[in-house]
Image (cartoon, rainbow, N blue to C red; front, side):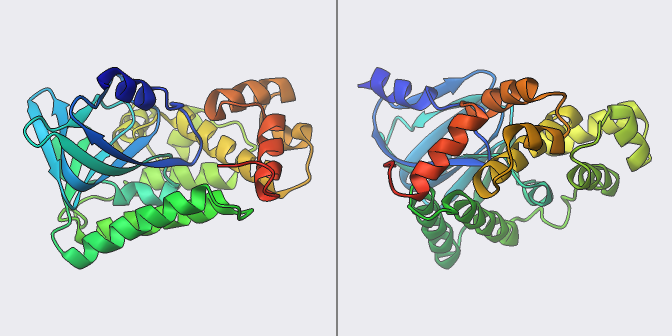
Length: 286
């Protein structure tokens, strides 16, 4: 039984674009172990029972109403807490929108492992309900299902920010935000670390350090993620050819764009567009 639970968990595609949510009810033996974490963020809301999150200093225990957040690249060593031996969790892997990053600085149990204890029953209920809504939207028939699910996740992030005791202390450095906004406005441009450092008024080494520290990604990883996220929108919502999309987003050629897209999303741009069309018309199940 334990091996089945682990297999189901670790086969998750590590570099999905935008978000990938789910809901689990697990008993004794369930755990996940990824020594290098994943390339995206992971948020887990504990509905019932208790979960255990291992780190270098020991274990952090999540109970009903707790929300746990793991940064990209953080050890994943979590499972059912042994004493209670049951855990119901709502979870989502996601790449945050740029504006969210200053809302994701929560109290840390260990570097990259953060927990918010929601306390209020009303807040806890709101977060749980939006997790449920996000899951339903993600697999629903609406042609904008993924974008609506992302909006539900944004509401979760904002609600959590409202009860985060560190909210007033955690802000993305304005110089890093300037660099991020510059990327978002000019996706087709070539963005070197040197160019972004100049935009932010920082040295190259200082920009690289702050960017990784505050966003969990390198500048070049951020650039590519923004381009791929925009590509999924264009593939889904526009009639532009793959060649046109590649050019619009600053990729060297359509072949290279296809390689990078498949690495992030798991399928080619052509296959992704076909899948989304099938889902929109109800020809494909969830």
